[in-house]
Image (cartoon, rainbow, N blue to C red; front, side, top):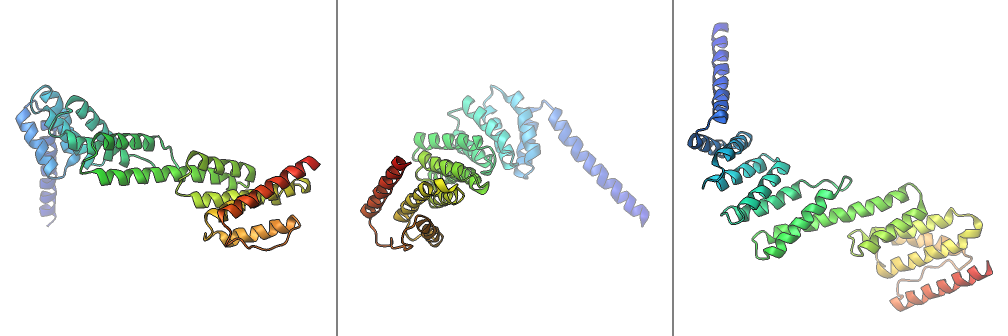
Length: 296
């Protein structure tokens, strides 16, 4: 029994060695037809790493021939299937520079974009690849607005832009988590200044208001009134824009505390106020701030 197992193991090793030797022989071969056929066999079998290496080796032998665009395209496609998107993107870019009118060019253009999209990083990390992907996808849509990949490209752009929105929002909110409320309010306002349509707009407006509230609450007595008035303005701005927000209860509570600190009636009756009413209230606050500034 032991002898039989040893023989079977030896045969398995020989078989593996034979396969490896065959691949190595192909890699070192200058027989274009044999190498070309083997590369496609590996590709069709799903052995994309070996197929890619053979197509890469073939590209030297087929350079300048009618097979070259096929070899170079499948070199990139093998790397794409192997999920080596960085290398595949380079392959497709070089292919398109050399063969912009190849029958494979249209697919190569889209696959290059998909490689760029798949090479992007989560929002906490460097977003340079995201900007590169957005630029390339946008140019592709402009150049070929009838592409069958239009909807997919739009979805890619939406996801990538949403990621940039989150990057900006989370970066600014970090100051709030650090309890640097003045810096938090400035940073969050700058996010909306740069992109008023940020998908986290509601959250940003909430943290702007809470930053000004906490900044006022933690201020020295001489500065509290002025800073609570800033919070009230942020509060009115928030509820004027998003009156049904899930943040409303918390902000109303902060507003009551601010009104109490300002020595005013503690009531919240803003549900039916119009935009003109909010504008009037803000003008009133500004007049109070100027009046207080003159006194001091």
